[in-house]
Amino acid sequence: MLTTVPTYEELMLPALRELATFDQPVHIREFVRHMISALQMSEDAAHEMLPSGKQTKMHNRDSRALWYMAQAGLVATPNRGVKQITEEGKTLLARGLPAIDN
Image (cartoon, rainbow, N blue to C red; front, side, top):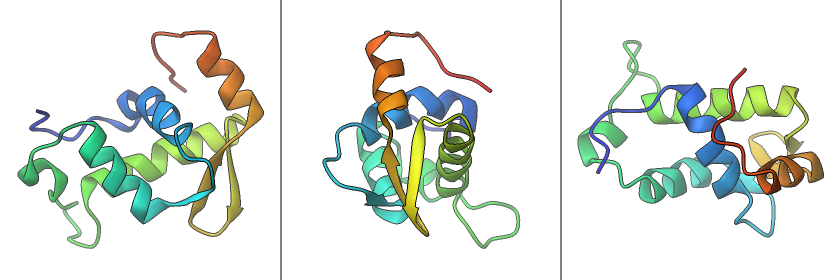
């Protein structure tokens, strides 16, 4: 069980793997809930807020990881707040890389 929120770079590969499990585009809120479950995060870590108090760290870092991967062409944004893996993302996963970073 994770007791701290991973950095956005640490989330890149797990997020891409999990995004690949969705047959349809997924809203970021639903995806964050999915990631919390997939990573088996503790309740405290899952609900830890940014200093601003406006967003959880997990939502922020998942969003950031997905944004950077979108810039690299691995993730598409078909609608606002909605993400989907691209063919390039699927190809990268098939290569079996140990990590993704920016």
